[in-house]
Image 1 (tube, rainbow, N blue to C red):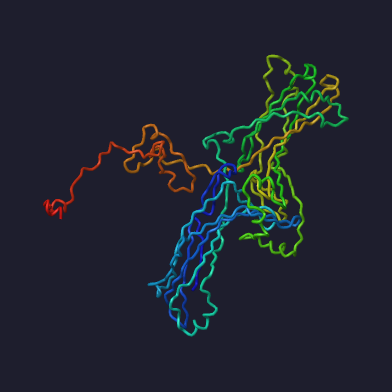
Image 2 (cartoon, helix red, strand yellow):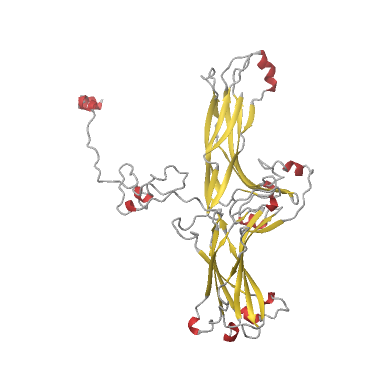
Length: 517
């Protein structure tokens, strides 16, 4: 007999939303095709084959692998979720009645696996396309139930080589896990649909050069407030930025000597690769223990290079790699000059301006255009989402440098000393789902005896992702059901009048004696 297994997932992508959370659950569904090709040869005719499907196990496994010349090969199992689709009794498979058919027999067994919501998204890092990946696996245990085996001399010769029970495996089906962050509103007309986060930072005079003539007291009185978006989409080509400046308790004479003339903005991405799984990650999420990790328990689909390191043919070193690069475009220096003479703190001591700040606002460009992957993976500059995983941590920061000058002799034409203050705030790069398509009509077609409320019928339907073919015709939930889940029924549509059936009119009535009989 020839048996082939194939995994057909409902979707090759698993979309998750929000930050990783072990309390949320998602679903991966599909079906497994079992194809039976009856044996046939020149020595015997096609015959009936009877098989018993004793087990059909579908497994969803996630893994994170890192490979480089400096660190060698490292692998971590993220999860293994298995489900046996066969109940207590084996399933019978047979081609009875189709022995002479030219096509094979195929059975489809559906599956639905529950996937936790804390898993990191699929990404590629390191050499030879290593990284975080997920796949579906399937294996079937099938036993032959032929009560009358073939009597041909060829089958008799091969009988000792035939097994009554065999295990068949399907080629893995790759599942891409994508994590999205939903914005507050897709209808926002601003640069970013995410709210703004505000930070207040202060200078650190102790970090100044010991030989600097810049008064430390003047620097310690500078207050800085920064505003950046709470999240930044990977597709955004610029980031809204604002900074507010004023002094706090600095004398009037000192305020007139202090200037701010220039500022620089830098956006950096830091990637940190590890040869061992991050302990803090394992403490936060239910990563399988050491006994479930390779090499104690090998991965179902390991990287092809793992064999060299398992056999000791390649040397591995234990260290951590880290790299940081700018996300600004190549033609952008990030340098901005402040218009005017720069004496922005001259009026701070005035009581009526106690709540007045000097504000700067601009948009910082970001190089989001994908670059070609160079031969050396450490030279690539790919914008990634801010994420935390066992072997890779990606963080983003915005650095702001202010150039301050101080008039030593109190005159604008005299000697000056300058100092640069550097601050940084965290950024969070996320993946935003595609904007939904606008519905064709704000009034959906009603189904059955469903009555739409006058208020809800005027609302525009909430758009669905472009992949949903029914996005333009799906009614709103409030139009079909009440808040408690009961279906709305349109009682204004009368039910049809009762009409007796024709056979009921012609059937004779039974007497009381016949009815009791």
